[in-house]
Amino acid sequence: MNNFFDLIDKFKFGIVAAIAAYIGIFMYFQMESYTRYFPIEPFHDGAYVETPEDIELNPENIQLPPDYDGGDIKNMVSDMNDTRDKSYENYTQNNGGKATNIKELEAQMYKEAGGSAERERLKKLIEEQKQNNSNNSSTSNNTSNNNNGGNTAYAGKTMVSFNLANRTAYQNNNWYVRNPGYKCDRSSGTVAVDIIVNENGNVISASINYGGSGGANQCMMDEALKYANLSRFEYKSGLKSQSGQIFYTFISK
Image (cartoon, rainbow, N blue to C red; front, top):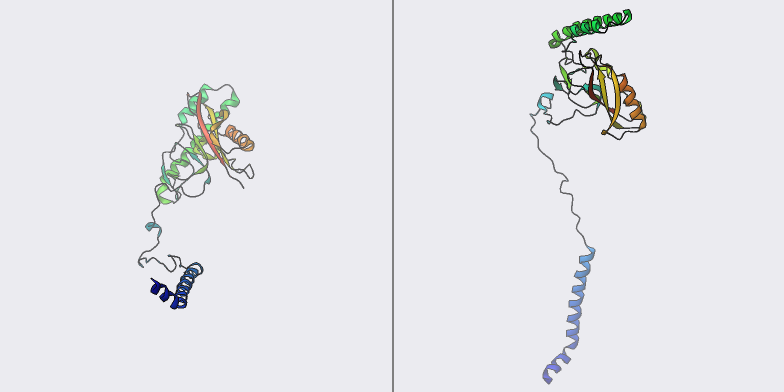
């Protein structure tokens, strides 16, 4: 045992030096592990996708998804019951394929002939409808020769839409359902208006449908009611009143 301690005493400086060296090496690698780092480049850097050179980006080669909404909402009026084909490109706002029944107007004239002024008004209305029907017939016959989509309705979103079963705007012209969508500055929202239309196509009642509206302020509701009451639809014989709706979308300028 004494020999062991004698041996340690003899080589004590060497043992201390060796232990110090091991500690120094250990500390060195520990410090290196905290101070050194290896930057990693983004995995997509320099990445590319090979595409065949023979692909041509022509319109006929591009397919739109079924739920494509046509982009921004258009400043147009649409009939929610319009049965025409829908398109995002070739379309017209008005339904040119449906003519007003002149016999219905003549029946109205005899039924409501309460005076000379009224008879003259109805006669004028009948002449207007005859002219409009003639124009619609001409448009229908020339549909194949133009690109305005006379028998095609717009497939996207419009600022105004109305729902009045089996009834179109007056003279099949959606101009008679006007758009107040830019009347309220810096305001965006939707207003649904419940309407009641009489036999002559005039709106006799209009009220806000709060459940169908969203983000609407007082200006929007006031303008929606005003324009709803100004709307006019086709004459419908024997239909004293009919309920429907008009939806107005307001866009901030």
